Image (cartoon, rainbow, N blue to C red):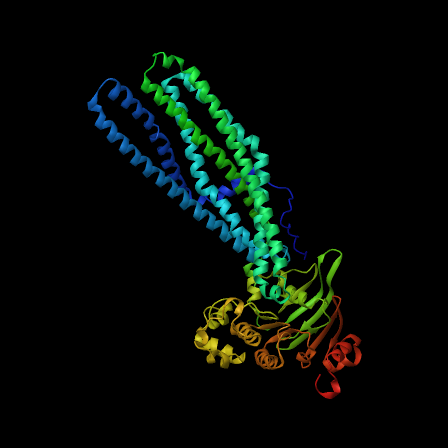
Length: 596
């Protein structure tokens, strides 16, 4: 079985997709909401047509009412103007609401996919990303992408339809002016293409700087205790200011690029306005009415704002495409393989075997080398060794956070590579050295692995974990909220809640990864008593630095530099394994004293 493919680190580009393929993929998230999008487009099209009546009503007012003195038309024209503005306002609201509704739903669909994908990624791939960079996909990147579905689509579609409609009606009035209006279209289509490279580069720099700043903020907020302990607040502030300046420069560059486009557009329209006056000489000489001149002037003016919005929308689209490339690069990282449901039988006995298992993060740095051992059903197997020996990697392999490069791991004789990871992990109860408790009630955290547990089952798990007494001593008992990461609990209390969470689902295999190494003596004693009770009748795999916690294990595996040096009982290993003896002696664990 091969190791998972390496993920592309943030900022890397390998076969970067072209803008059109990225745009089409972006649109695919709006496809489920095509009905809303169709209604929005219909409202936008109707708005583009209805608004064209404004200059014509002005022509009637100037030529017929004031020019010919037909006062009978005054009231109908004024009523038509008020009605027209009401219809324009209603259609504009309907189009914006529908586009926003479609955009929000499409953006939430994308966010859900990012979250689901993050949960399905192998740890080796996910760890290439800083937490803040993943968070940025939900925040700044999603906001930029949402602009495409909302304001950009609305403005771009309405503006484009309006430009085409204005040109058509000018053609209908006077073909010469129609040709003039049509001649303007290629320019505002060419200008965005001319600016594309600069816009894309500036937009990409802004998105990268935003993600970097978000990652740094997440890191510093999470590490505020260490920053204070080492008086590094000023250092953190300097780094944040550096990233903030980088973001500021990127945003400023984007504003400059956008401003250049707008200046070019305004200058262009100004020059063409002068040309229009020259070409309008027949109107000045009385060959056409004053009202028609005003109407045509308004129609030409109506081309300027939509053209400007098209350019602005193009800039926003490029920003969104830069954000989309970042998100899609994350979504394209291969997920962890999932075995067929039929190949995921329930784990009943809990036998675990490693058969010549090897693993490496990179080709030239093997972490686990030809490891073989067996944990018999209902027994306790301990894995010991110095730091960096590969102990935690064995747990990652067993839980299929990563897959071995060679060899096989079996549970009850089933190759874990053929099992669905979720089904496999459902057979384990895991307690880590630094357990992650979630904001909420104590009872909710104990139920974390199985939400269907009754209150009696939760309490039973807490009793086994030596946690019931301190829980009932709190003001609200099992409903007591523990804060983010369980910060309202002591280290020993948090560890016992984690033990209760691990055993609440009644797993066949219990995995303890340095579960008590960070506790004081009294907390460790309580946790060890809890773990001893939890291990009864279960296969237990213990990773530990403190050898006193594994001396009564049914089997001990000594690991060094990714290899198994020896396997046996405590007394046997102390007598024949130099590394094990040295580890014991360093911790003042003498076998003849009865404390080892």
